Length: 222
Image 1 (cartoon, rainbow, N blue to C red):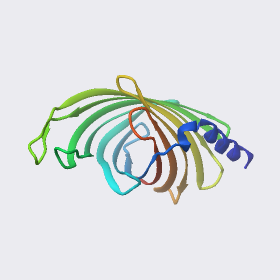
Image 2: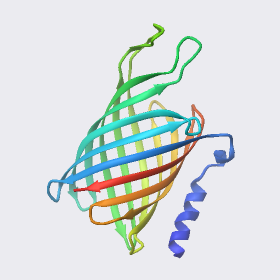
Image 3: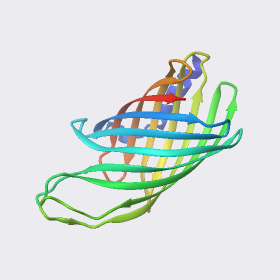
């Protein structure tokens, strides 16, 4: 119990001062299905739905297909492709509209178990392409392509029960650092195949409103 309190305290120390400013609130929902082909190879299907504007409007959703390979006991790599549909905000010239984006990614995750705590460092590289679009009002929007780089440091604590609390911090960079994510959550293992999770995230954005996120997730392992 003392170690769990220390994890919660650490999350609080990571939370930036700007948490108390006027921010946005969002809700995220995750669904994933993972299939182990053998001890090293696995397949993944995943979908997420994100809201914005104090959960009153849709932000985006995506569908992901990918796979992973366990290189050894402390290193694995994953890759995949996402279809993302964003709801772009409107302006005086046009109404809000949905605009697709495509993303490919590769990750390398280093992990180490020390007693009841499992630490991991994930390095993420992604390439994103957003095609050109024209709104209903005839306004042309130029297409774009860019790279993303993320670094995530995560700690999971094994309680010896069905509950596994965790915390992590992640930076998100394109040309420059664009946001920091500070997360605390807990997973609940229903049985061998089904896991439920809930988390709180604070996103410290440098070019937009900071965001408080409440999320739930369901994971199926086959």
